[in-house]
Length: 355
Ligand code: NAD
Image (tube, rainbow, N blue to C red):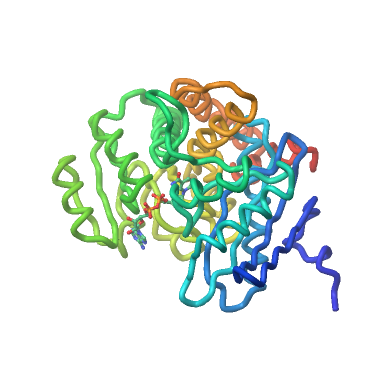
């Protein structure tokens, strides 16, 4: 048997904590990749994995991803992630959440949790009864930081799209710039609304036909078939649905100059960043442009931990630094002939002391 820590996904994690509570039926993995910059922070995923090894792989990959994302967002936090291995029926009980909250508390702040797939704001409230090390809680006052991270993620992506348009198309105006948005849920819907205010021409696609039709009507946008949206002839393609959408085949049929959207892990494999670069398409590394949500969650947590208050304005001021970071990546990419995703990874590795 090969040692677990020699697996490529392990990537020198500082801690991988396995939790088993027979009474509540909890089985969970809490992974902290790096605490070089602060406590390992990242959401908890509640998911059924027919093969538990896939749950471990998810925890490790997502935890490393959070190290990179948090470092590039300039946050004083490290990277972590938890996975609760749900049963086939995804049974979530108060006892199971309580046991998980106790496990997080037992780590004494080395790991800080928040929402991820399968976990809601109400679940965070339940966890907060057992541990202080939780964020993404309902907002407690007017203009206070916190709550649903979606709108903050949308704001950062909107600013990133404007920076990309300025960099690639040499214009400050979004008037008439054609943006195709894949996925019009919490993040993509918010991006579309912000762009519509600036007069961008929008093409929207979502597998929820009724929802996307209503949004398109509201914003005066066109609707594209979800299977065809990646091939839309446009200035900017903004993926806000699924990961692993860019591979050799899909890249060959792209008709855009820019890719800038919030979906996590958009490149099917690392080498596809170079394929985009070779096609002359400007790519905004996903974990840099979609950091608005974690900026909100982290600001909320750090202020509460330190007995201070923080406002939406504090959060927005940090999100407004995303465009500068992207421009720095693109300039370095062009100067070195290296694709932006690789430049971003190297910058993140330097920041977390793993270069
Ligand atoms: P969401 O569930 O609110 O929206 C996703 C939308 O994508 C849904 O409307 C869904 O119908 C649609 N969709 C799914 N498959 C599709 C397909 N094949 N074609 C077109 N549309 C499709 O989720 P969200 O919170 O908006 O997150 C969107 C993406 O952004 C995810 O990849 C998520 O991991 C990432 N992300 C979200 C946040 C956040 O703050 N919510 C932060 C960082 C990254």
